[in-house]
Image (cartoon, rainbow, N blue to C red; front, side):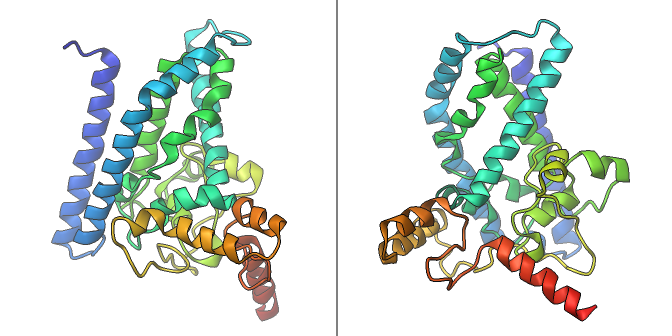
Amino acid sequence: MKFTGSDLSIGGLFGFVILLTIVEMYFSYMHDKKIYVKRDTWTNMYLMTVAVLINLAMKTATFFLLAYCYQFRLFEISNIWIYWIVLILVQDFLYWFLHTVGHYVRFFWAMHVTHHSSEHFNLTTGFRSTVFEPLYRVFFYLPLAFMGFTAADILFAYLITQIYGNLVHTQAIGKLHPWFEYIFVTPSHHRVHHASNVRYLDKNMGMVLILWDRWFGTFQEELPEDVIKYGLTTPLKDTGPINIIFHEFIALTNDVKKAPKFRDKIKYILNPPGWSHDGSTKIAKVMQQELREAEKKRE
């Protein structure tokens, strides 16, 4: 079997991520930081394995669909440097959009929620995959094929940005230089993203660039006065392997059943998590507005 330069590059990068994970795990245990918990880490590995299997099952279909759409490309970029820069930038924006949909549409949140279900935050949290994302991710990346990017290059660019996205799942790094914090997603930004504090909900969706969040109103800085609490706003009582994947689908189904009107049933599926037909629960934006009003009163 022959390995290409791309194969070796990807293998080397994944190996680097695994090495860093082992180092972080070692120092966590040596200094009793309690960043890693055995059961939680095994759950992360389990979810990663499920996601990998689904990815492999979808690989051919994903490649075929991207390659098919490439036939109808609107233009091509001949300069190799511009080609790769534009590909990575547009792919990163499309990921931001995909990720934002995963937080603001409850049907997609039911799939994405597994990635946020851990009450711990470390490099293995990046492996805690949205296991069903491979079933629909390709549809968000179809514009890239129409823009003249090949299927192989789209998938390679995604792998590279995904590796970067894994590296920001850490508490070992504080805030970086202001210029880097302004442009790129950093561990500080992504700690905010995984927080269950009201202020931090549905913020910092970017994979590589934090600029998308700054420009589109989903940015939130990590604040020392609002110490991060990781996990979901309502922690899971059952963290078994089946429930951790399907619990939000079960909750969504129950909410749809109890909705008195058909349009309310649709709203439960398409509206943000927390929406309810009777106002018994609230979406994140409403809770954040209430938090701002309460803070103003205390000033």
